Image 1: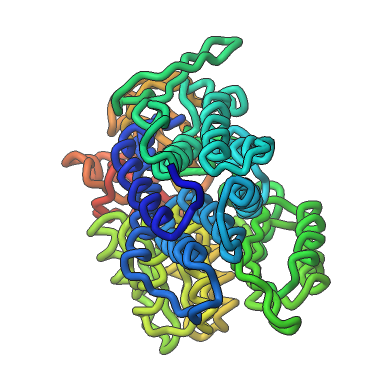
Image 2: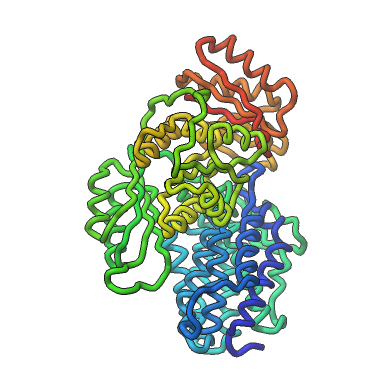
Length: 577
């Protein structure tokens, strides 16, 4: 039994947490409130902790000796590694939880129960601060419950405080279906919260020497949902019932109205993003003011201690508004905003995607996430550098640096990659690079954005044009249902063909090519001059010909462009401009 948390214990915790997450990876991946086969919260958390473990193994720290405690130094390495390897929203939030722990414990000489309690409170604040509109019933609720339980514990005994926190986290996890209707409908708990429970259990194992740690780490938490109540049970194994991912992650949250995910706004006309040098108190006031102006508000700081008065912390600010001037004035009132970008969500069609490839501009580049060899070749033909699907913060940062450019546009092509892209952009900007994220949610939007690049424009103007083109491209995807679920289009069963438009199930069918044709009719019924079809790895022979023939017959004035993308999960991606 450990009395204090030292550097050796933290290293053991990181290794143990990674091993535990790997054991429960499939279980957490399966906690998916949506039938689309892309639930990957467990995988994202494993990759995030793998990066943290690598950071500890490399032991790279430029801080002068003696400026921080040994356990603080190890925690900062772990948090930094998690930040660079963060995948998906859950990975980003866990990295912020680790950052909060590191900030609170770095200067604490001896870490016992009360110090850990204060650190859990700081970790909770960091996690909530990373999300503009926190949603209860997610990993945020779980970490908050752990912190409250630790604070209520009067003992200074490390194991006693940690045990209270882990017990409360499990109880909070079991309660998540009662807080989020999507979880209750799917009969699951929150995937991100489940992952956090695994991390806390791993820490308790280290502190207690492996004794008196309940069997929850080796159990699957599932829920049986009735029309009025949610009952919790556990069963051993790794085959849990189905972002629980509805939390903030990873293929699920974006389909619920309560989730904070990047999206084109129906109520607000502009997306505003800027970096800000400002003290924390001023940022809190600014955040409240911006929340009244619009939605999709995200304010994330570097987490570093403020330096001299003339070197305040750096913040990344993002929101959707109608009054751009008021948003920027709010930033000016708080401090010094810079690298300001404004994107207008206008329904004006961009140039066709078959425009000639843009010649690379010295000092300017685009980095695109490409989940398939065919997509990578297509984007390379448009003059862009590519990374694989679901890249980490570190991989995106490496790709930015590899371009050798000083002005870089990031195209994430997936809502779950946008958080990692934002972190990569912020890290690159600290090195003096100008990096902008165009929040593309599908490869078809990236094609539209790349088609309108113009090297003669100023960088900020080029980014705005690309964002407008991406926003004007409606996107859809076709896949096979991974499980039974209730969707906005009705109940689907495993193997059904699902057609999703802007992330929501629009059609449920039994035959792939029939569903694809019906999807095209639905999209073009709202107007369009150009339709782009991208075939996935599961696309059968003849699918492209069948859809192309249907468009030619039914919509003779619409131009069709077809590509072989090779993306997993989705036999067909569709874009309409």
